[in-house]
Image 1 (tube, rainbow, N blue to C red):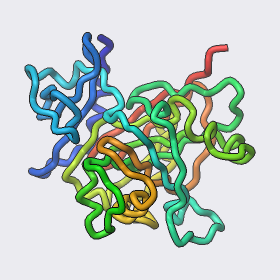
Image 2: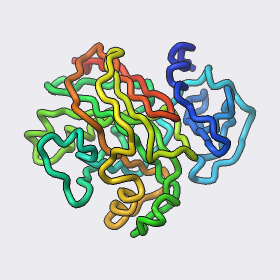
Image 3: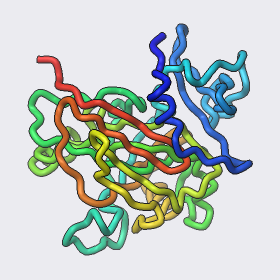
Image 4: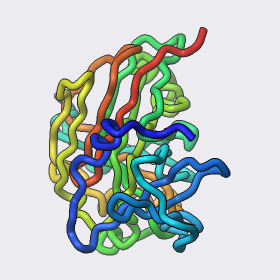
Length: 274
């Protein structure tokens, strides 16, 4: 089994919250397949299923530092919100409702997975975001009750090909290509996701830095709004939007997205095989 090096593990764990009610969950590789687990200190207690599917303790704890962490959710659908920070809108006036688009489940990848630069891509950008994990089936949920349907949050990168985004009829290639949605490193519940610091670094240089309190449409509003039109199932994901400006990334670059209280994803950009 491939393991995460000690230095990388230390970076991934940076920024954890320690409040009594905070819980952390991961998905990790084993010799017999992927497993979900609950992080308890430096150990992971394996679970019988995803925690939002009532997974129970199953098996002996294992050391966190020795695990290959995978995408910590397997969604049936992935919804994303565009232009949800004033700082990302440029000259655009705020919209009266969230602008939604979809990413495919196959766009989702793990916290250390490579971002493959497609052979015919020309302008690939990062978009660091807070990602919401749905914990209960949600259909036409009132905004006042929407928080009850949120299991937790994690860091994510809505990788985007700007030329395709500009020229294609829809954003299918631009936003939903394989591996265009790294997430992780874990799902954290019990933290105040309404006010967390979100930062993106490329090769160690800070490119984005803003608090989730600056979202135009907050998480309860988004969950309620999406559920008017799309039934959300446990494990489904919502990318909540990216702040500030983005810029081009190239093969060889290392993109790191950190969400306060959750940790970091670190993804190397690599050229597609030719």
